[in-house]
Image 1 (spheres, rainbow, N blue to C red):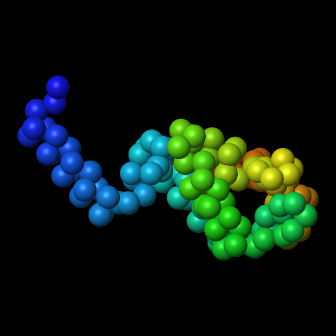
Image 2 (cartoon, helix red, strand yellow; image 1 turned 30 degrees about the horizontal axis):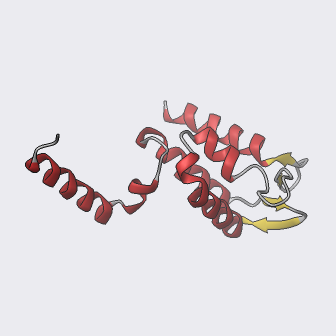
Length: 127
């Protein structure tokens, strides 16, 4: 049984954490990978490419907002950056269709491949 002091310290730590980093309480992605998810959301948001989902094209900020909304929905199931890509950024929950990405002057690609390529590039850069 935890001591009263330990219980108060844990409650205080959680309270401070919730005020300074509210997303940290919700995120199941390990802290060592949270920067990767943040990078991928920023990558989508600033991209000149369009996310195509269920036949509709969504640019930058709209695409990132949609992925972030799905991330919030699936957050408890997401344990890695790769699962973030799989659950929040690869397929439509309603239709089951794969998301695709259309970039100027390039062939369409699945969002899964596009984001995994960027994740690999980002990880190499971080080393």
